[in-house]
Amino acid sequence: MRTSRTSITALIDLKFCAVTSRYQFPQRGTTVTSKKEEQDKVDQQTKQALKHDQFVDTTQHGLEWASENRRSVIATSAIVLAAILVVVGGFLIYNSRANQASVAFGAAMQAYQTPLAAPGQPVPAGVKTYASPTERAKAANDLFMGVADKYSMTPDGKVARYFGGLTYMEEGQNGPAESTLKQVAGGWNGDLAALAKLSLAQLYRQTGRDSQAVDIYNELTAKPTTTVPSGLAQLQLAELYQAQGKPELAKKIYAQLKDKDAKGAAGTLAAQKLNPAPAGPAGQ
Image (cartoon, rainbow, N blue to C red; front, side):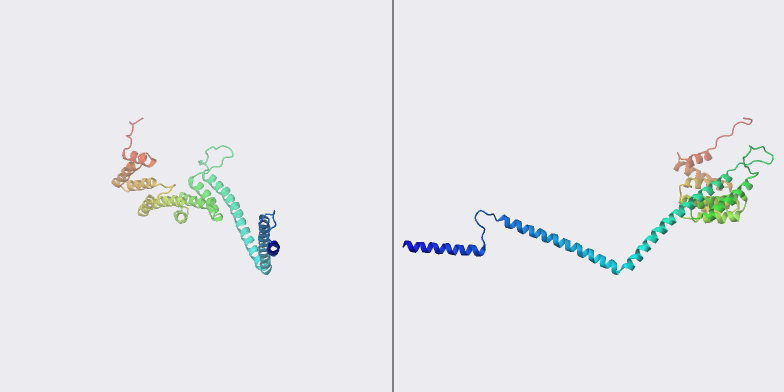
């Protein structure tokens, strides 16, 4: 019986050894985590290899595309570079012309502000003068219109055209004055256009076209600007009515301005027109 048990025990040991050797169970004293760490290491290396392959493939495809489309890439780059050079060059040229226009406009304004002196009147040495407003206006007009024509795209060139219209008026050249001021009045600069319209209204009054002047004053009142606020246009309209012998219409405008702009310049002037200061005693 003992021999039989011994044989059975030996048989069980042999089967156990066979199973363990086939499936490679870990030996006693080792840990299972070593197997997992090795697997993680393999997975990480695999991912890095895949990323590297993707980068290589992407770079290779990009180089292949650039090589195949080399002429197209060069042409596109040349166009972009040319466009940049045009923009930069245009900006530099514009700045240069703007500076030149500023200098020329300054010279024209200096002529326009030159003092007047009657013939024979003593003047300081080296001081330039003109004998009459007409003579001065003509000299300044030549300079203003020269700036306007040569530098028409610059801000100073546009302002110079406006002053050209004013000096035409001072010379008595109503036709050129009207056409020049109309050109400025139709420009994109609203502030400058409003000034030109105000001067046009004055020209129309001087040439007996009051109805056209009234239309302009009403337009400027409805669309005020920084240079020509509505109060200024209304004051001019009231003065026109006063000159036409329509004092009631003028007083109506003055009263509206006085209430609407009591603390402003237009309201103050309107109040003075409604209540003029009494004249002082004769001889004072």
